[in-house]
Image (tube, rainbow, N blue to C red; front, side, top):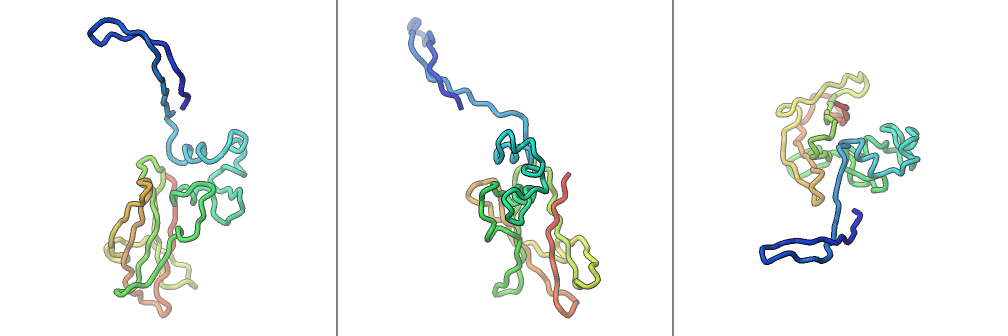
Length: 170
């Protein structure tokens, strides 16, 4: 925003009235998705350096790259604790949950993969309704992200089921 006072003459039906008006020019360019996130989180010199602002960069050495921060709805400075995908236990069994952006311009697909055997490394896309049973989606107070929850049926392997969340750029 760049507020300014402007002299103006207006006619509201009873003759012209001169005075001052407060002008609040508001504009937003067409940048969306990850590019918008980068602009919101880095200064001009940082945007020129992919080692700082690139999708796979971790400028603050947190172990979480920029694209993952964006996909989880976090800013560059937000703490990651409690916001990573997780499996937890409740009274009915196991629940898998992960955060998603609600922005239609997010340029990402959230792909959940599953395996019963970590040794083989044979990961497959989880079939929603079979491998994962949808429970609910809670929209966060910021209105920009949600938490999706799924029931995890027990696997066939001795050690259970293993899940991973992949972010696929569209």
